[in-house]
Length: 313
Image 1 (cartoon, rainbow, N blue to C red):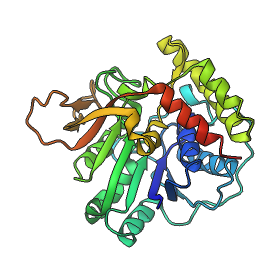
Image 2: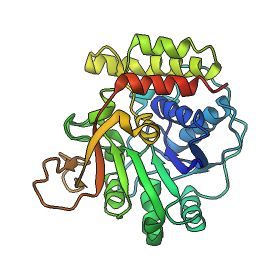
Image 3: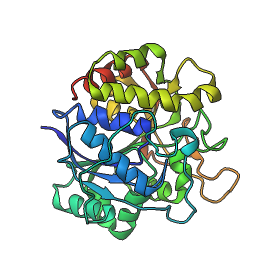
């Protein structure tokens, strides 16, 4: 029985990779809907990009909803300097023809969680947490209905990637991240500490290109575009690939190692705004609120990604 999921996303090349990994795993994932949110680029572009990815994979049957166009309390920060002005720069993808649903993404999340059996829906978060947090504020009862929240968010050992102490998804909307972490639902965080280990080396990108399908070729072109910024920044043998860590963990948890800890988000200091305060050594005595993933098997990760993208058109 496939796992029912709602995807929140702000594509972004690495989010595209995550969505393609999910779509290449229909036996494991039943995608109830995709909610686009402002983040890597503005909402109008993330909405377009999400639909382009679904159409690339031949899955225009999955409904797409518009989430929140700005953070809960702060001005929007975007990342065109990494992802390009369109957010999916690299391949030349046709403009999408599938519609955006009329219902707002916040209402879709609330309605779906209330309609489905308690604990049967997982929130798969690849983006800032604005839309999910807004749903939790408007309808606190849904927290007890969520099966799990699995998110790419935060950092501790690796510092930050948008400021010295903050990871991008959390920095864009730290107040939303705070709301989600306090909601009481079961959750897993895939932070920079593990995603920085998952590097798109030339050999791994060549394997995607060698698949011979349009999804593999498009994904390789996306990652070759977005790697330029990270290769100059980190000077590693390949750029880190963040988003697919979320579905990879859901598919193959044995590829990863972590522990249950307490995590809080800094929302008061401009110097460290969005910092993930991870009680890795259990110093505070606060009860654990997340499963925090620290390490992963990069070869197993890329083998899984390549195999599943190879199933697509």
